[in-house]
Amino acid sequence: MTELGQHRIFPDFKRQRARMVKLLEEQGITDEAVLAAMRTVRRHLFVPEALQGRAYEDHALPIGFGQTISQPYIVAFMSQLLEAKPGMKVLEIGTGSGYQAAVLREMGLEVFTIERVRELYEAARELFPEGSPGIRMKLSDGTLGWRVQAPFDRIIVTAGGPNLPLPLLEQLADPGIMAIPVGRARREQKLLRVSKREGRVTARAFGNVAFVDLVGDHGW
Image (cartoon, rainbow, N blue to C red; front, side, top):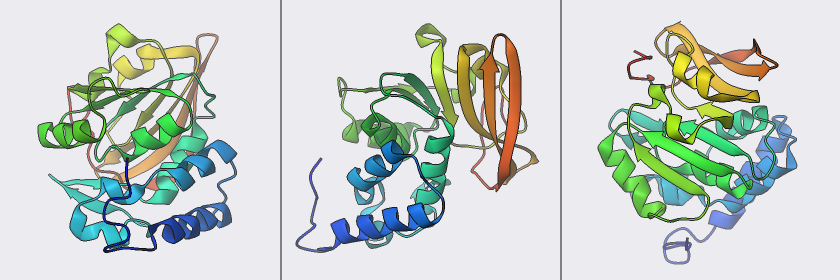
């Protein structure tokens, strides 16, 4: 991808990216692979043109259709929770802007990403054309997962539902890790790291979050 319009409109994208990563380090992100990916991926290419000047600020931004691109800290923190290694297969539920998928690919993962909103899927497809190395896309109900490609070493869900979708848990490898926001109230969830090892499933909460709705057969 190219730095579209960098010199003409926003000449300091690289500097903004560096400031963003410095803030992530101050906020406790320590995974060097995550920091390197956040330093490399050009976040401004994943937001509407009118908001590109704010792309590296530490908050979510709207991308249309009631969806957002998560704040940089959440993207980095969820990526760090995965404890992923290069070459692992990761399933992302909620492609959205495509930024999280791009970060995961930059970390050396094989990314399978599902989006249910056709317009967002098509916009992300322009960034990741068919055959793009490291990323496969699907337009579908993400709560059902991607069974023909399972199992997945890691699963990341970037929308919040009322419970843990059983199909995703079934498609998580053993051993495997899933990062997912879950809560009975909409936009009020706990960020969970769900671990599967030797047939045993455990979950640990990492604070309160407010994600867009996880919509589907096993969501809202």
